[in-house]
Length: 303
Image 1: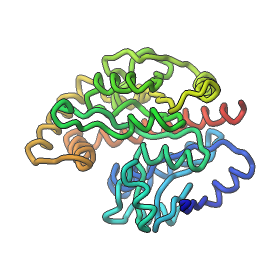
Image 2: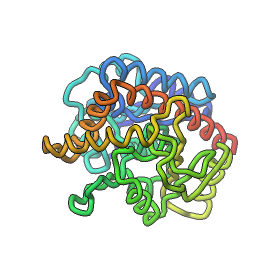
Image 3: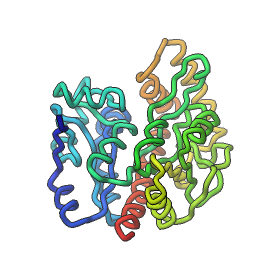
């Protein structure tokens, strides 16, 4: 069996021309933001990629076919659809095989990008080790995917609701390069500084692209995690956001929220507690990541 892959007209033209491509996820549309901010943000992120010299390829599974790039009509339909599956490595193939519809997480988008020959992916934040994982064993499949799939992922750090020291430790164990862009500190999604030092620092898209190529040249599997700090004007500092996160975590525990429902619940609760400021920051950091990812894609194409 082979998966059905459908390229949008824009992506098909870019492939034919050898233009740089940037993969984008679709869970930000279906699970990450409310209507209509989800559609507005998705359009803005795609526009930002185009404005910086690359072509966006938003990934989604629709009626059992992997769509590499979606039309605006498909974007609007996804943004308003109910009960869209949230796809990761474990259920991606099943959704394709059974004719389902699903939005791609970081792990699933990396797999989709590999299938489509796309080397760079821009997202908001990656998953990681959840707090209390020593009891729950709740660790995102994103980390294993980074160790196996050769895609450079640009994010604003792991989501701040996670156990960041343990997340960094697991990434080290899996041999995933964690690169901070233009600073030594590891960023933490809404905040520029997680209180941790990143293992690697790179100051240009060209350096990141060269490291991506070198991994392939020496036969190392897996990708790279590029942590791009949120712009200073949009940051919510750690001392401001951490009490909010603690409150949201306590609320999730009190309501018995678990598994894939945890992250959407926490993001919604944090949105409420910050009176929408977290969403404004989220949009700013995703746009910032799109700009850097486009730059890396251009450098890879040049190499």
